[in-house]
Image (cartoon, rainbow, N blue to C red; front, side, top):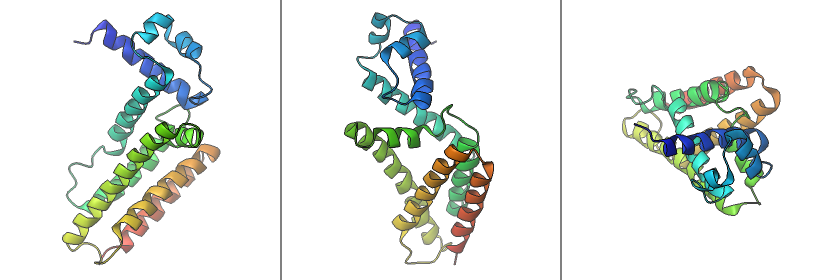
Length: 198
């Protein structure tokens, strides 16, 4: 059973995630968080020692929510190429198109905002991006070992192209809010993956 302290901590994370997603990290003040949570400074600092500590906690929460949406239905898929296609579709149509975060793609917004201003936080996010690219690479290696794709392909380059395409669509969708951006990117990336086949 969840304790009062755990509920309070989760409240801080949820409200701060909304604020950072919409206003950005640097434009969100501790007072904004206090107003949103109805906590005192002592109540807030009893759970988090700084605004940066809150950011790291909400980053983990954002990853959890993204993972829950993007990897839904993936575990049961044995074909690694179909897994890649499912992740692409989920990321574009369910995560971005589903407006999981009020301010758009939390990760893209944060990376743009923090780049050059908060090197440690930017590096933390970059490590997450690299892990995702490496997972795609792992699935491509698996596909090659099963004879599903051409041999000798540069798995890292392919994974990074998919990753960059997803982020490009996220940026364009953030500006246009046009679902066709997501639908067309899904279709084009599906076609791209199919071209890798033997």
